Length: 360
Ligand SMILES: *Cc1c(COP(=O)(O)O)cnc(C)c1O
Image 1 (cartoon, protein in one colour):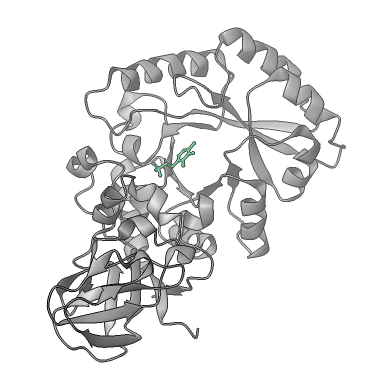
Image 2: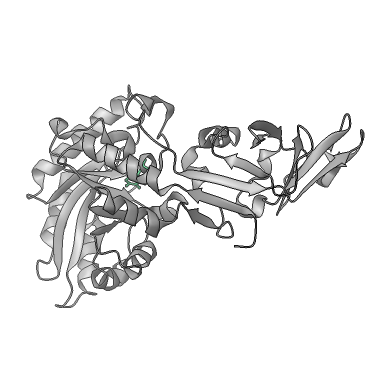
């Protein structure tokens, strides 16, 4: 690593979060959701850490992401969550990656691409009210069950996804549960019945239904699905940090302007630090005015954020090499996400590949 800007991934925090959730869900299995390169933390590291600490299964969005894990030697069951075109099912079967299924027509097309050496693992996906992916009627379920070819396909599970599990007084959350249970009853006995994401994981325990698997994403990384979830997740430790170092610190005279467009003018003699991170790294231009932490003190980003660097107003003179915290102690992830008008999920997965991940 040559550049002094890096993402710090706290493996012990991930391990802690997984163990704590696993302890609370009891006999339910824990599926670690590592899509989008483990929410920006590095999918292989996160998957390995989760599996060593109580997770037994892995979820990704894409077949590409599943293959990356298999090639890194991960043997645990993997479910991909995105729809797969029928012409690619033999690849999923070769890598032993389970695929969501929600239409009989898709199954009939998939069958044409499988030979008798294949065994395609499937989880039936029910759209119980999210409106995104899944079958919507019991008739569709029946047709789907009829189209399964037992020689080349195996139904491993049935699942759904909630739109409002992170809102404590949501009627839709209850309604989706009731809808999903109707599909579970109409389906044959399947190994895995799952509905909960992080927000649902500690709200939907086995007492609430036949659930035996939780799909844990954001909480594993130590971030909250929403502020309301603090009631369930007061034990989380954040795993993500973003750090850099000053590459220059200079005194500027009153009247001097900073960065493109000269949008900031020093009012008095000031110390300005240059930090080597910019929007090409995923640190948005909209962070102008936001504060980073140097030596425990907030330092405002002054002037426009450039492609590769930005400037901050320092409380005094600091040497080149002084550490700057963009996300971490004193600069919480959620605060940065709120500044951008988005959620922690989006911020975590927007950092580009050119920011190295340092696993601690
Ligand atoms: C991303 C995803 C999850 C994980 O959600 P979190 O809120 O991060 O826990 C679970 N299930 C599905 C279908 C997903 O797409």
